[in-house]
Amino acid sequence: MKKIFITGSIFMIFICSFGQSATHTFNDVNRVSENNIQSFKSSKTSKPSLLEKHRVWLNMTNTEGAFKQLLVGYIEGATNGYDGDFDGITLDRNPFIDFYSINSGKNLVIQGRALPFNESDVVPLGYRTIIAGEFTISIDEVDGMFVNRPVYLEDKLTNTINDLRQSSYTFTTQIGVFNNRFVLRHTNTALASDEFEAVNDVVSIGIKNQIISINSTVENIDKVFVYGISGEQLSNKENIRDTHLMIPDLPSTQQILLVKVFLENGKSITKKALFK
Image (tube, rainbow, N blue to C red; front, top):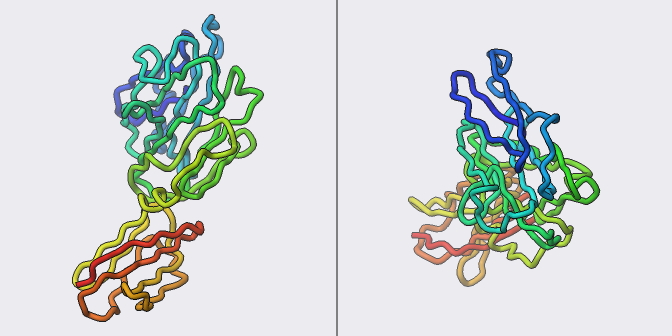
C-alpha cells in the first residue's frame, strides 16, 4: 500500500496486505523538501498468505500532487461488518485530502469483506478535501479475481457508472466532506436510487435581507427559475456557471417561493423558501 509522508511528521505504518509480511526501511531518501507528498508501496517479495483474498487498491489524486489510497478486499474470515482483524480506520492525517470506504459508521482506509463473493455487494466511499477542483479516482493495483473482472465506480451525483479497469474517473468537487457520492460496485446496473436525495444533499437555498442565496457544494449551477406559489415566474437566471448565486431583485412582499435549480450535469431540484 502506498503511504503519504509529510516532512517533520511521525511515521505510522499500516501493513495493508491482509496477512502478508513486509519490511519497510525509511531514511532521508523518503523525504521530499519541495514536495511534501511522496508515495511508497509494500514489498513485492513478502511470503504469500494461505488465506483466499481478492483486493483492489484505489487512489484519489489531483494534478498538484495530492494523494490518498484505500484498499477494499474480499478475504477468508472477514465479515461485512467491522472486523478489527481486517479493517483499518483512517487516521485522517493527510492535511489536504482523505479517501476511505465506509462501514458501520467508520471511515476505513482498509476494509475486508466477506467470502464467498457476491457481485451485488456495494461499498460506499467517502472523501474529504480542502482543495476545490478536479480529482481522479483510479486503480493502483488488483489481485485475485479482480485481475479478470471489472471494478465499477458509481457517481450518484452524476448518475454514472465507470469501469475503473478501463479508465480512471475524473470529477469536480468543492471543499468539504462528501460521504454520499461514490459507491464501489461489481455490476454496471445501479440499484434503485433516489436522485432527488443526491441533488438535495448538494444544493442549499437561503434567504436573508430579501436576497436569495443558492449554493452547490459539488457541481456548477447552470440556471435558476424562481416562481411564486401560484406559479408565476419571478426570476430567471441562466448560464450561471458557478457554484454560488445571489438573487436580490425580487418583489419585496412576504410569500412562499419555489426555487428550481438546474446543475450543469443535468440534475435539477425544486425547493420551497419563505421570502420576507
